[in-house]
Image 1: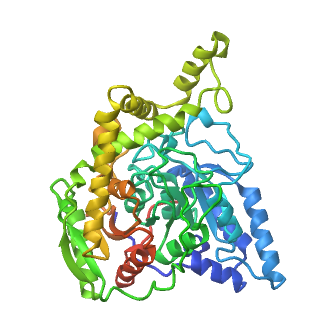
Image 2 (image 1 turned 60 degrees about the vertical axis):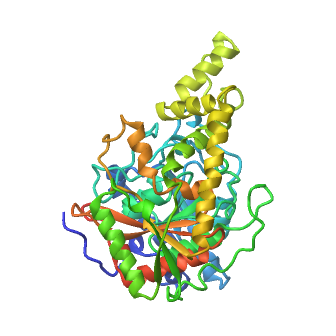
Image 3 (image 1 turned 180 degrees about the vertical axis):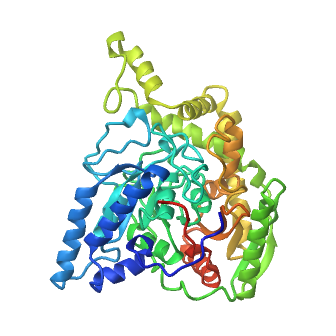
Length: 497
């Protein structure tokens, strides 16, 4: 299949969030028309892509009508007025089920909205539905969902990445203008790369985690998946900021993320880490990323080599810290208070065992066992404490690099989208798909993945830009500078209905 030629989008399902909002405010298009266009596209392409677990047609149309009514009355509307968005199904939504793609939460309906969801609604966004993910966000392909995998719009025999694969697939397929995902070890950036869209992981604490069902509390962060960098800035502006409901949300001021978007990269120092260009990365990805670095150099950036010497230990440390926190967080699913209850007739212990056996999938059970082992008596120091020491070393590596450069540039994923089932039987190979992303979560840094090319098989390639803590404006500025010089972000998958 040849690459799709860039075209000027005209349908509501092809517009960016900022373009769609402008059209709605100018009354060239109504918010209801935009929402209906997306639901119509869902009917055509969802059987192929399977991005959504739950759709919210009537509430979405009611929200769209409310936006149209406010505009008709001449009232001001929010920065995302009428923009149709999707939400990863580990974000709590009042009155709409939140499953985490797990049988244990199949019928769970929250009584409140996550803070990020509440802020999106306040900005005028129209929620279309909840998207598929790897169960409890544990995975890199969305194959671990209890409800079946989502598929990549560029090639429906391949995965969209994970764990936010449903959100990425929805944006790439045109069934949402933008989406929210969560990123614990690359779960926004990796699926963005595999689906040819933009995915932003903010600094840890930049966005409230209140209402995000916890996987690993010191690593999880909510962020946007969008069609271009400007939309990412717009979405981040809506959801960022401190929250009294989340003690880990940072009290830092929220800057205007769009203010310096067009400032270019002249004078910026870009660091190229040798450890992220190691053997094992697909050669086509290496070539595309090197070409992207040349684009930034020609645009005025200064390019320097940097070293992040503890990168090789990132995966090992991450897969101690994350499962340990998961083991603790998922202990609450016991069949007592909410979620699946099974085996109660056999007594309390039987209920615990049977509820968790039926409720959790294989990968979640694997990580709970790994984490419980790492935290157990006699192993805590050898595994968990040692992983925390490595985490500090990884953070120090980035601190040293950022003393010399402003942004670190590297691939997002070492491989393009792989075939469904190709790595399902080999957890280690699946874990290695996150080799270039996990260290950012360990260090709490912001990072963005943007499209930078295609393989010979027409599969998207992602470029990752990493910044200092709370320096999302510089990351977005550098990403936008690359985007202005190329048209990769304008390409859309061909072949969908």
